[in-house]
Length: 155
Image 1 (spheres, rainbow, N blue to C red):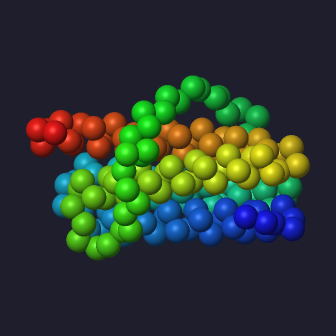
Image 2: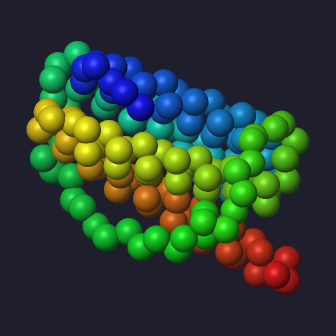
């Protein structure tokens, strides 16, 4: 990834977040379990929040409230290391949706770590660090759900 400006970085990140919103909305529309639907809709809302924050950084040069963010260590179960890349398709099973979500969050985490390393602007660094934390939290949640589901299936 070669970017010529912070705006290029932000445009790229905004598009990736829009893609995440579409994935969670599509997956929610296909799911039959109400608890899973609600969780997917909540994740779509979180990704929409990321779009708003990135857009705010692009327009105003800073994001209100980032100074109040509390960082917390998020463990890495590394389940994604053992899951093949899967492309989302309508009608996928719950198990497959979890696999797609895990890989998507892994990619998002990697992206924000790379953007953090490239960002020279302090406000951008702060926001990318927050997003690293958030994506790690999402990844852990899906990996835990995946483990629980596989255990229920006898694996």
